[in-house]
Length: 114
Image (tube, rainbow, N blue to C red):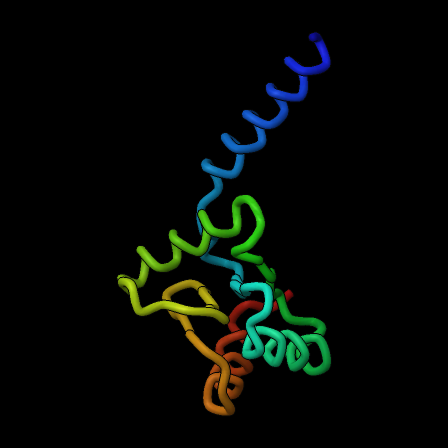
């Protein structure tokens, strides 16, 4: 019984810690979704070409990831037409992955040195 109570306390503490987390203005959040081909392409580009960038990848499929994703959606008033990959950084965001967004990410990431 003691182990069950301890496990329950750890789970509740973990959820409370996630709920308290907010978007930091000095980070680049890279929101991904499992199975998203555009997320995979963005991840491959970043791992090959932006290794030293301060980009925090956040899966919306994991606990806490969806919470932060929603915070970004609310911050930029993106409404219901939102998808992944989604990059949130300071006062800027990029949604989707294209050659144009790739160039924009490289340029914007210069403001967020590691």
